[in-house]
Length: 333
Length: 298
Image (cartoon, rainbow over all chains, first blue to last red; front, top):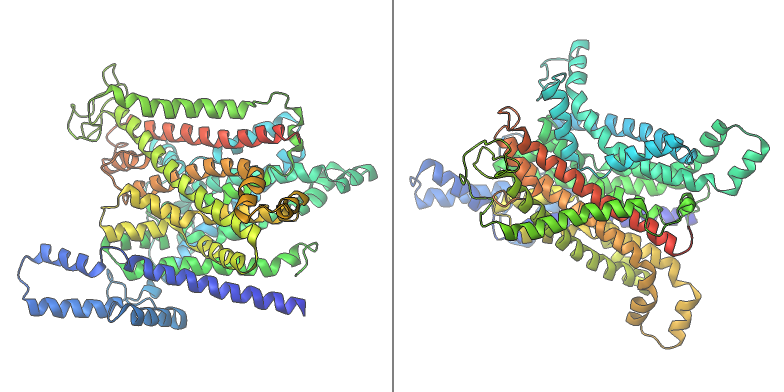
């Protein structure tokens, strides 16, 4: 009974979070002193000169408002927006690539983003936790301090700096990797797969480095704390090996907060990929968002933001449900 | 992503400082190095501008692409600006944005987090719901939409305000959970039965327990705010004619500084950013150690 109640409560919170999040992204741009249609018309006018008649202008404004879902009162716009987003996952047509819908464009870009981000996040998580575990378990040794130093230097460096340094060194001074990726067209073959791997290596490397530092530092802190617990001391007195204690005793207990971190960073791939894709011209959702911002494609911008909100909220919800399975000490209350 | 990380690390560290038993000095090396770096950066970027009459962002002030010399410490760039002075102003402006946004975030999260944790009930539920929602909203994309709408006329105040509006949630969440464990302690009850009001209890009894965490959170939030603004500038969506750590890199990339051999133009801001961020990070973890020592747990 407690379990069902917990799930229902958590689910209601999840829906409320989504609802408030989508509402905020709806209202925020509409309270700004500038609106997309004025911007677009100004752009058109400067391009074609003063050749439009007032009637044609009114006509244009009317059809633009319809396209953007900006017709009618704020309230009816809101109902329409919520209806199409929630029920049909429809953000309207993309303005820059007119007849294509936002949803279809996002879904073509999604595999690129997901492939790059999933692989690099998981690699960074595994490597970082291994290094952090060793550094934390043998925290008295000199090697541990060196490993920790690595984490301390790497962690606070902003992502764009890491990316620029990687481009400087590996694409400019030692040109092993291309400055911008060029992907082979056509169906997936072994050659194309190799080409994708080669072109994705540099952006992937920077993402791994960026997530690496945090994983080391946080795993190290957790491992040092867990190592001092009585059950680990007891295991030592029983005569278990260092390896067994490190993996089966310390790691299994220190892993949980790290799993939370992993899931949440997987959920933030849309905003996480933004800088990577822009700096490396990688054809994913982030680049889509940047081009949309440049060309005033607002439907696309809302689509990507809403998708990102949905992803994070869903991940947090799933995590809360799965957590007690991972950690038997937690009880549903 | 950075946000989630800085919170978790900061929140975990005070719990078990057993590795720091070997520390004898109250001031640890991390704090010393961090504060030294910060002193250089803050002092330098706020004092040096008084010694120049040149507007660093004015273009064509000097000959283009001059090498490093005694008159131009880091040379000049392809826009005819002095790289050294541009960098000094950039560090100052970035620090200003970072500190102002971080102050706002700290105040909002402190008020909401402490009051929600202590008062409880429906008020707490609503605050928690809001916190959970704001954690899900990605800040960088929101800033991108805003700057697209403003057509490049994003003001610094605006960037700061948006950072504040969407950045308080993680701090508030952590503070609330810290207060939850304090609420049941004996001295809080004593204060309540002595007739202290809600505000007085939060300010005098609870605040001293969480203020060390707030200082650490404040420094981490400066990092986050500078980082977000710089990221926005690097992709060309902040106020680009004002020097910041991001806009200097944007212009260097825009003029292909690498291919034209103007490597100082891009390497100088990279080195400055790394040192500044290292300084802030070492200060925050160093202060954490220092505080753990003072509490007598280390």
